Length: 395
Image 1 (cartoon, rainbow, N blue to C red):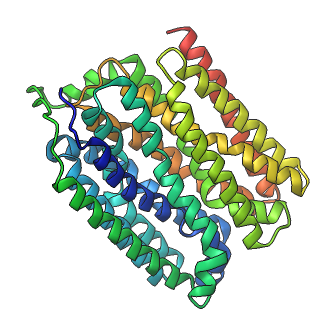
Image 2 (tube, rainbow, N blue to C red):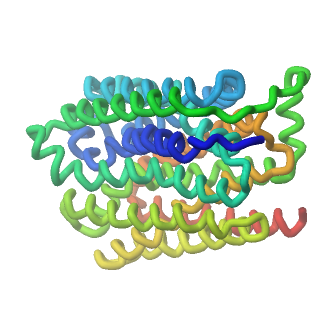
């Protein structure tokens, strides 16, 4: 397969829409207290609403994979960008937990087209293994960049600029999402596409059975639940946790969370470059262990230790790219079925994604508080590290 001369430029366009994806995921996080008070939501019910898009992913991600394999990443990423814009606008109009759930769920209808397109795009447009690892390191930071940026500027810039209205902030973010989607359409339409071999005729369910026959695919699917549970349970709640456990103001908590996000971006860019097939599992296990240390530090620490623990937990940024590399380099994943493989992975993962913020919200509402939630996630991370080690030793 011959690589397109425009692959890096198109990757940049994809990064833009994926950054909007991250912005949508984190849009409510720095404003949770305002939103909860306005729509009358408890932490548990807000956690349910925050996980609505992940719930939709469980059902739409496999379909997204098939759509990508049939129609390509161009249409897929564009439709995903439209769903981000629509979801942000719908959230701005929400006036109850139910309408907020529906608004966030809109993001999950076509959002998987972006998530599944990214690894599929890399598999198809970057046939060279070294370039592929580098491109994974680039695109996985995109949602982190979008999320960090919105967390950093919401309380300090956007809310004061927009009359302290969380609804106006969401409208402004929808405009940014629409602009990035249009930029993707322009870049992709003008690029020379690589030639992708047509998939061979296979009986219904044949591609799925073929993929599940791969030990690498099965390992990636087995890791998906925990990887997404960890990221989704911490992501939307981190600002509130730092604010409460560290006794900081919302702005200060947002700043520390954004700093941790910057560390996460650096980790996401760096780690995949070292993650060749011989090292990737060891790096993943190490990331889980370090994450657990950071969570325990935050759970039992003073304000300074809460900050240190939050920064250490940025290690979770390595979990998704490392698991994606395991999936992409599995022996039966090819350019013709990469979309289906990615869709399967996101569908399984988002079972953890929808559970994470809900479980964290419910525990935070109980007497255990956020301390109990952090210890729960830490225990899951350690258990997964041990399970992954045992699974790979016996392979």
